[in-house]
Image 1: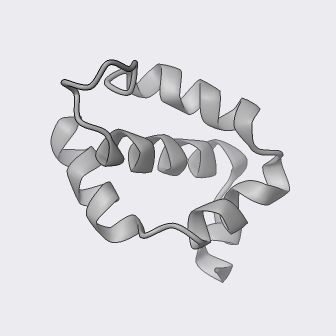
Image 2: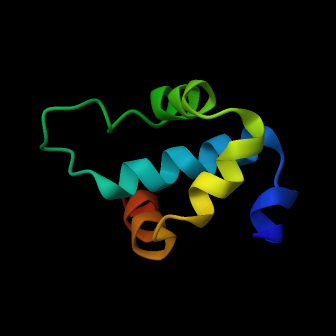
Image 3: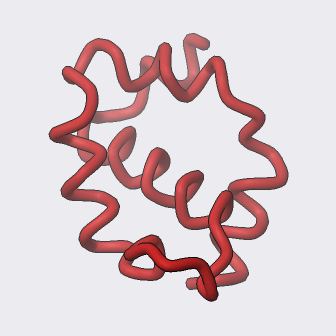
Length: 71
């Protein structure tokens, strides 16, 4: 948790967007293929202090790996 909290707000938003990107298939009827849009949405979805808590509660490993593959 400390590692997530030590990230800057923009870094937390990008990590959240990367996790979302890795959780959704590009073939689904959604806009999860657009990393920039996801990053913007991450900032509007969670207040700054809640992003690290939100990420800590998610299974990040596979989602982050899949997200990096999609970039």
